[in-house]
Length: 116
Image (cartoon, rainbow, N blue to C red; front, top):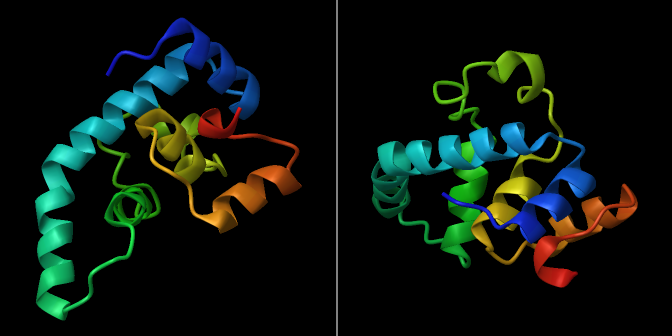
């Protein structure tokens, strides 16, 4: 997934990662999404739970379960302990963040690509 130079500049400054790390994260998210999104959605259907914001719920399901570990070679050296996986995924995918994510960014003195 290509990221514009303007957006990459914002993301690197906001999240404190290199452009290579952000691109690796974006690529890993896309790979993981294509591998597990159907399974995640089927799980929602089987239990009768339908998220109010499916894109945000999918981001949470993919990044919080460490499903990116198989797609980022040096995952353990920087991504495992990176505290803003959900927020970065929302910014990369340009999916509206839940308010609690926005509040967390604000508390940490950070911002969101879509609200800049």
